[in-house]
Image (cartoon, rainbow, N blue to C red; front, side, top):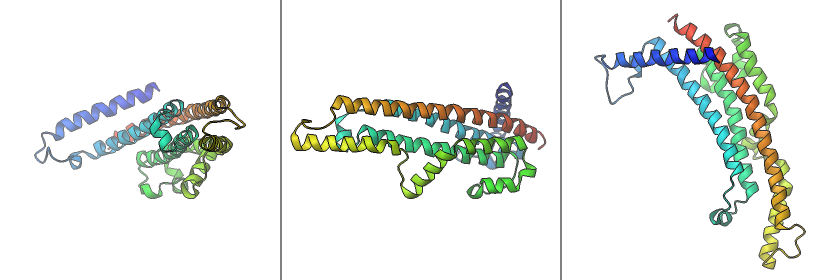
Length: 246
């Protein structure tokens, strides 16, 4: 990770210096982004920094999911909108699964850019990366392969959820049914008399379910962080080496 820090500092310092120079260029315009004034090396390193930032944003989003799931706001507006705790958990699990899949996509884009493969982002998939594997460091490609294998079940569920609206959390179905029956029992009887589960029991079931989901998320985050950190180190070494040849 020390190499990553040094390479990141090098890129930052280079780009700061580059932006200082373009500010005195005769074609500099305060109302535009002036990207066209950057050198080829500057454009190359700026995109590396951009992709690095996108990956970090995705990692931050995964942390946000844990915060949301563990802090369900039991407020009137949620009840009025029929958002119970299981709805709330499942919605944020969908976000988590989508982010895990998106991280893989951005990792592929990162590799394509750094190794200058020229693959269009719309078709920057595993198949097209493999076609160019002779131009990619084998260890870097292996990181993406291992990430995919580690999260294949999550990615499959995410795809089913996206294209077929399949529930990402089937283990919550029974609890959702209990909540539905509880709500109807309360509505019909003006109370929970006669309902097989008490509110305390249902809350306990939900808490156990939530704890298990949070544990699963934290375990996934630990694995995902390992792969992303590994990729960043490889990517920045290659990126700086190529940039210095421009």
